[in-house]
Image 1 (cartoon, one colour):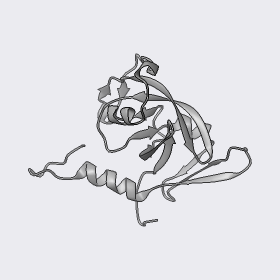
Image 2: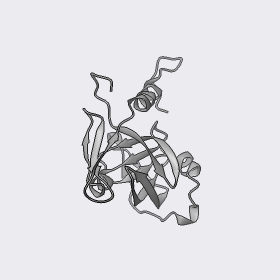
Image 3: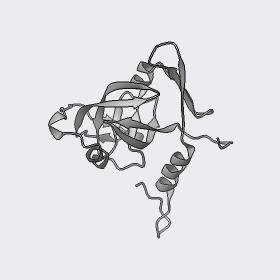
Length: 157
């Protein structure tokens, strides 16, 4: 682990049986989010399984984003598989998925960004499993986000 740091917790997991890197834990989010249409397409999810949602998402800075819809996706991590609802948006950040507090609660998880780990209950309900963060992937996301363009501006990609 790299110290000192103030890194968010970023992991890899299986979603719809595909390995997904750059998954951000966000205990402040009320929803799980598939961040881009590209990620949705890479997971080979069926458009006919997308359900409409009438609620816009409020993102950083108070801006409202209209979701494409909601889909249920199987998510596997720490020897546990849960079917989770994901809101699909197309906002082009550097993360592929955002995992909100509902999933964290269902995993009976406790996050520590300081220690770069989420400790949760295993599938038998008795063992404790640690899900370790990937600081290298988080740094890739960070450097992509703040990379200066040729005019000195910061790009959000």
